[in-house]
Amino acid sequence: MTKIELINHLQSINGNPEVMIWNGLVNDYVPLHSDIFTNNLYRKSVRMFFVEARMKRGKPYSHKFTLSELWEMRAEAKQSHKLASHEPYVPSLPDEKLSDYHNPNPKQIIVLQQGKVNKTYQDRLGSIEY
View (cartoon, rainbow, N blue to C red):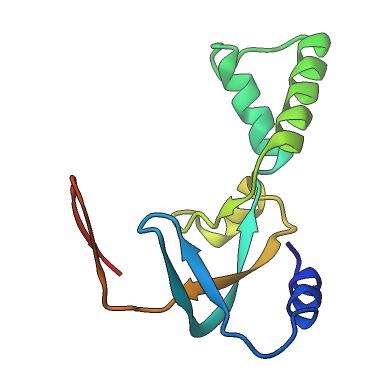
């Protein structure tokens, strides 16, 4: 859901009800925390998918591939990139390697957090404080 869709949906509701989040883990409604922040999600670059396709072939790095094999790996890399999901930033990478690993256009998201309720949920595996 985009920010505009969320705003339109909230504006269509009459009155001023409290906004809460359903926590399916403990089967309870919890209030929103007042801290709302944005974050970026990244997707691996086509280049990284190409490297993975090359490694799947099981050949040494010095192996010379034929032109048809390279085109096949390129098509496989593009298809894998198209189907890949966005992931959080990999902090172990130095900034100069980030552009090689990640697609340079991140997906910006808004993160809503649940507030603390000071309740405990019990089940057969133990308890969860939330």
